[in-house]
Length: 472
Ligand code: GDG
Image (tube, rainbow, N blue to C red; front, side):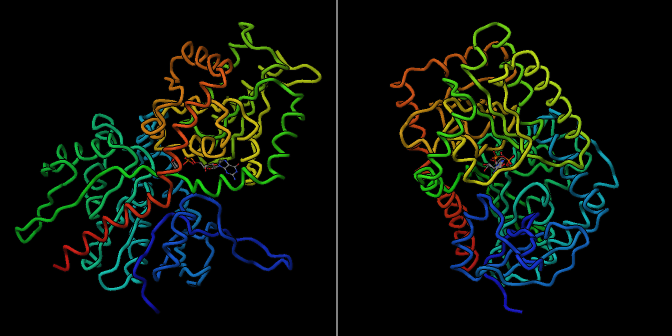
């Protein structure tokens, strides 16, 4: 088997299993920023991608797709429950999002996490070339860097963490806190969304392992008495801004944006929320604020409509089933109280849409509401900004997102402060065009400059530096 100079390791492969027109199983590139970001690099180098194919029990041999060698890792039904829904999404996800939901600590889940992480590490070790790069993605695979280093000390290892890393006081709850930190420290370059996440991680390293840190660097003692250095620093992720700009210029999509407003009964203001249905996204807080604005008579049905896309997510995890029930009860109550035959207060869509429809919604929205209680970055905020080349539109953005570090000209809110959020939504609805334009212009500059391509280049450049110094 040919070896790859760059191997990406992620929970999912960048393709979805579909049926073609004749009913035969086939593969289709999955939508998503990471795939787009890495597509170009992967085609330039001899790239491989290790990941799960998306169906439990599905056995497929490695295959080539669009210039990338894909290596499927198999997961059984039970492993999916314990490793993915259990440890990744029932333990790590809530713990790392500041315990918004209660993390569940189960030894059986941890055992599956270790076992599955080892499988990913072994697959990567098989396929990477002598002295090559392996770039591990995200919280499902935190043990892979160290496991891989043991198998392949010759390779340069990167890890990027897409979600927040919590303060030590919370992280310390994790019964396996030492193993996870050691797992991550197997990487040479450990990337986070925000400087604060990198700082939290370094503090955990100092507290748990007593290793020294200086600015970005962490000194890791080796068994032979020497030490090696790893770096932990922010690489704020972004979007493929150009592709959003192009979609936003498409006449069919622009026409669709106009049509959306008409179909909503021509409200003077459309408010929009787009989130995976997840308790971190603050959807309930947003609905509460909007419901109270209707109660107070500060907004009128027919004049203002909230469109809430809540794309289905993690239906196998109990907390998500409960959240869905709560949200749908709230939406039903508000609409029951305020809808008319012609107008709805909240157009709630528990559906996934094609990218084109999302862009039409962004274009149609006068105000974008991003009210996450905690979010690694939040790409929706950046997508909304990218499509508004006319500099119209207002972004209301939670301080608790990574995006808030960059998009400082948004209307920043604390989503726990419902009163404050209500006032800010009113300010957004009433904002004069000149102010919209000034704010949007500055945010667009940032999003267009720091796109996902630059993110990938920055990370790979740091891996390259490690390889150069190792060769010396
Ligand atoms: C994690 C971190 C971090 C959503 N619904 C539909 C749809 N989407 C797209 C959005 C956006 C993406 O999904 C969601 O990205 P976010 O960044 O907002 O949030 P997470 O899914 O939680 O992502 C996050 C990110 O990783 C990257 O590092 O920013 O903090 O939690 O692109 O547009 N796309 C389509 N139909 C939908 O219905 N086509």
